[in-house]
Length: 181
Image (cartoon, rainbow, N blue to C red; front, side, top):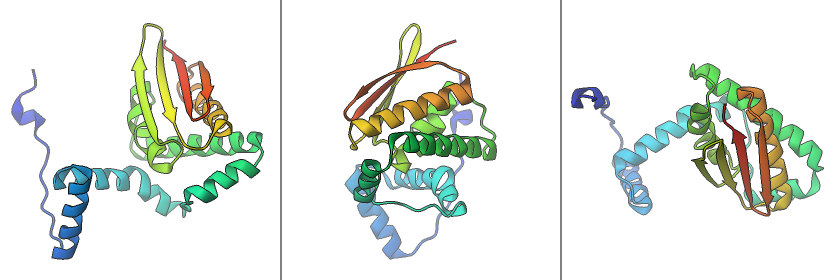
């Protein structure tokens, strides 16, 4: 059993101007979060995502442009590009933060966070059955994007965790069934 003293999280004090705190309060209220929860969310996104966006001088692309790019670029080109990009991103994040490669860490540090924040998909869910881990990715970009996500994430599972997977492709959903070892 974990003692209460071992569960405590460190506290910090933040000094900010009234306008920023007012906007933070409005934003937290609109999301149904406490200010503390929102601050933790913002800090986490900055540490595990936006820091790398800035360091690598990434471009944030509006959804309408992104959708048009998916439509005009060949599927194979997109699979190669997305596979390479997510592989490099995962390796960089895991190396910089000394994270070991496991299914749980992949879910926590990529699928539930960076993958969502980057716009690769907009909803992620995971469930386990007796023989596999099932990863569900929902997005808004159609069947071509489903194929790209399915192949790219399947490649990531093989490359980083040496796990085989099968996938089911739907117009705006990918169900990836990853074999357990």
